[in-house]
Image 1 (cartoon, helix red, strand yellow):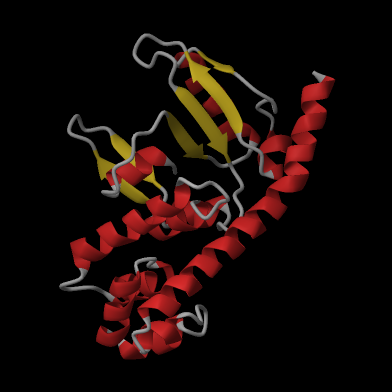
Image 2: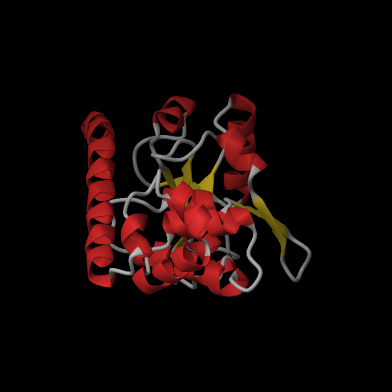
Length: 225
C-alpha cells in the first residue's frame, strides 16, 4: 500500500521499505508472524505487534535480516485515516502477476490515493503523479469510474480543467463532493491552483489531528519500555 504499490501503478518512487495493509485478527496475525520469522525480521520500534495496536491505527515496524532482503524495512498497518475497512479494501484490490509468476495484491488506486493524504510533504507530489499516470494511460477511452476518480482526485489544474470540459455532466455530479470543480468549469487556473493548495492544507491538518493522540500513546509506550 506504499511506495512499492506506487511503482506498480506507474508513479515511480524510490522506496526504502514495504508497507502492508493487513486484516487484524488472531489467525492472520499468526500468519504474519510466521512470514516475518521467515524474513528474520525483528521489531524495531514501539508498538509491539499486537492486535490492540493494529486496531487502534498504529503502524508496526520491522527490519529484515534475511540474506535475500538485508535491512529491508517492513511496516504493517490495519487501520488508516480516511480509508475504508480492510474487508472493503480487499474486495477492491488490484492483483498483478510478476514475471516469475508471483502474484501481488495491491491496494486499489483510489484507495491508495486516499491513504496518501497525509501530513508528509512527499505524499502530495506522489498523489499527483499517481492520478496523472492513470489519466494518461486511460484518457482516450475512459470508463465512468475513471472519470469520477480523476475529477475527485486530480491535482494538476490544467488537466482538471480539461477533464471538466470533456465531461460536464460527470463534473457537475462530482462537484457536490469537491466544490473546487466549479473553478475548473470556468477555466480559472490561478484560482483553481489556490483552491487545490487549500484542499491539501486542510487534509494535512486533519491528518495531524488524527495522529496527535496516537503519538501520545507511542510516547507513553516508549517511556514504559
